[in-house]
Length: 175
Image (cartoon, rainbow, N blue to C red; front, side):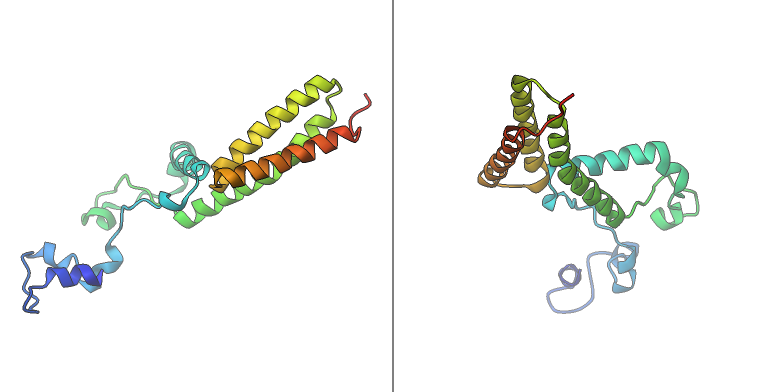
């Protein structure tokens, strides 16, 4: 912000600016708490987090958020006292929710795969289930971890090996 304020100053160091009235005072230091950046924070998020973020914002607002949260008044948003239709949702809370969901998904997937294989008796069906679980695991690793291809390959190979060992040890339902 200080760099931008310096750009608004004349080269001779005077405070005289090409901006006049409200346009000039908008960028004053006393008004910095009112400024908002519309820059996206998606640059450091993985694909699944971006999807869940969009889903949470749209679905939550449509079905529940507009009932639980008061709209930001137009006085806060636009400088008059008419009620507005803008809503504020904390990025920190949304990020925490997304982190919790992706952590639960990534820890549940291996356990659910082994649990599912436990109940399959037919060897061919077990092999097909291992292929499907491995593909799903690889997809989730790619979407959640922003892993390189080599990291994804290594993690998927280790996961498949664990499932094969689980199946080859004769662990299964004797239904």
